[in-house]
Length: 136
Ligand SMILES: [Zn+2]
Image (cartoon, rainbow, N blue to C red; front, side):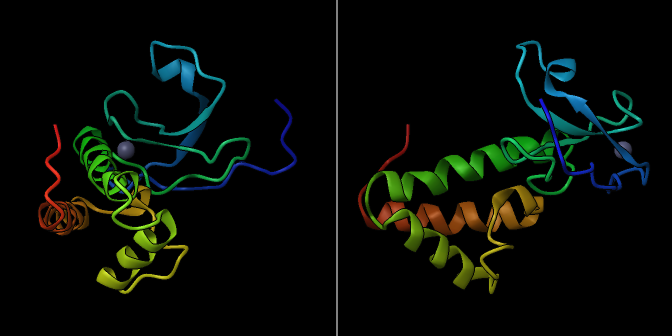
């Protein structure tokens, strides 16, 4: 994999150490041709974030296990809104921007805190409920 860009310097929000770029296959059991920014205190500090495909740009902030889990859950519920065609994907992101007063750059679940994920999950549940959609 060739990269013209340099890795970014990002700090772990949990312990303050610098994150290092590592192959995802170092962290996950399944080998992925992908990179992660991993806290240099890993695995003692279990915090990392993926990059946008084919780039060295982090998808968001480093996240520990709880936050990663919450972001996955928030994504699942949010994606259900456009997958069930309640809104187009574009409109769903605009709706998310409106709720939290975010720019389009900030409207990414990978940048959300646990608190914001909880708020999004709540709002998405209302929308799904109002459209008589129950998630498995
Ligand atoms: Zn850390």
